[in-house]
Each structure stands twice: as C-alpha cells, then as structure tokens.
Image (cartoon, rainbow, N blue to C red; front, side, top):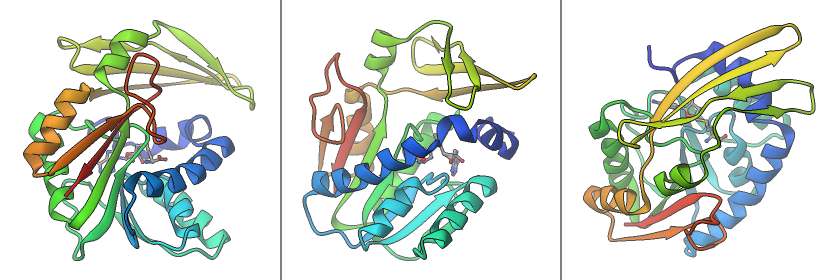
Length: 245
Ligand SMILES: C[S@@+](CC[C@H](N)C(=O)[O-])C[C@H]1O[C@@H](n2cnc3c(N)ncnc32)[C@H](O)[C@@H]1O
C-alpha cells in the first residue's frame, strides 16, 4: 500500500494539516486562483481535494465544483463541511490515475503539495496528460506545490512544530535520489502517544514541471512563487504553475 493510501494517518494528522486557519487561507486562495486564471470559470475540478478546503471556497463563489480524492476519511470531512453550509459539490472517491470524468472543466486545480506522489514518474506525467484532456479549450490547470529549488535552498534538518492544541510534530526531511525525491518522517506526539508517518514524493524544478506540462500538451505555462504572482525566486513561498490549454 503506498504511503498516501492510509486513512488512519490522515485522521491522526488531520488537525495539524487542516486546522481552522488553513480553511480560511484556502478560502482566500480560491479568489486568488480565479484572478490568476483571468478568464471566465464556471466549472472546477480539484484533484486530490482532501477535506474540501478549496471545494468550499469555490462553491461559495458560485462555481460548479467536483473534488476527487483517494481518502474516504477526508472525503467524509468534505461532505460534512459542505452540508453544514448547504453548499454543493460532486465528491468522487477514486485514485487520480483511474478517475475518468465524463465532462470537461474550465479549471483544474492540484493544490497544497499534492503532485508527484506516484513512485513511477510516468504516472505523475499521466496526471498532467489526463488534466489536459479534461480541460475545455482555453481552460487552465493550476498546480500549487513546492519546488526542487526551494527544497534544496530551505530544507530544515530535524525540527519540531508546536500546535495550539498542544501536539508536537517532529520531522526529519531529506532530499534523496539525486535530489529528485523529498522524503520526510513525521512523529506526532499527542498526549502520551507518538504516531509515526513516513512519506516521499517527487519534487520538480520550475523548468522540469514546465517541460512536463508542455509534454502533456499545454500551450503556455507560467511559473510564479505564489498564487498572487510573486516571482519564483529564493524568497518564494511556493511553486505555482499556471498551464493554459
Ligand atoms: C496534502 S493533502 C492536500 C489536500 C487538499 N488539496 C488541500 O489543499 O487541502 C494531499 C491529498 O492528496 C490525496 N491523494 C494522495 N494520493 C492520491 C491519489 N493517488 N489519488 C487521489 N488522491 C490522492 C490525499 O488523500 C490527500 O487528500
């Protein structure tokens, strides 16, 4: 079983990853994404939507939203949160690779470092190929992740984060396999228990990601350091790719 197909771990780490502030941030990001796209958007597909942070935001903007994710636990969270606000979204429980939507979309998103998880590089390329196929003409794919340049520049060896609820998260990030793969170990100390999780995913440079997107067929690719068009340089928080069909 790959590391990401583990409901128990998503459940244990939920409060660290998806706290209240992160939902507020995601809500703001939805408008930033629409501004970044710069053309009319009425339908959105969020690939690896998790607990629906962006589905909620896009839905509040009146868009027709679909989210796909492998974790039943996270999709249940999304369903509950949408229901609490009487918002609508189509939720699909599927691996991204096998998901075959029947319709096309104006916008496809893949946010919060949810790309590069497959251990076979051709599967990661396939996600981009599929996204291209499922976009309407003139549609855009937005990827928000961190880049290889950022990982190499700012990787912080073993460190600890303290959360408001008292949880402590120790982590030990590494760049391995000739710096192609970001590998991390998380140890969450909650009450008197420790929970351990290891994960790895590919990290791409801005240039590598651009080449993959062009290979998928995208006409133009813009690279930014944030969803608000900051430059992708050593001060950048994120690697954001805007690929237009
Ligand atoms: C870091 S979380 C990001 C969730 C969401 N995009 C957000 O911003 O809150 C990564 C997500 O990718 C999902 N995921 C990982 N591998 C997947 C796969 N092969 N197919 C579908 N979803 C996957 C996980 O279940 C998880 O929800």
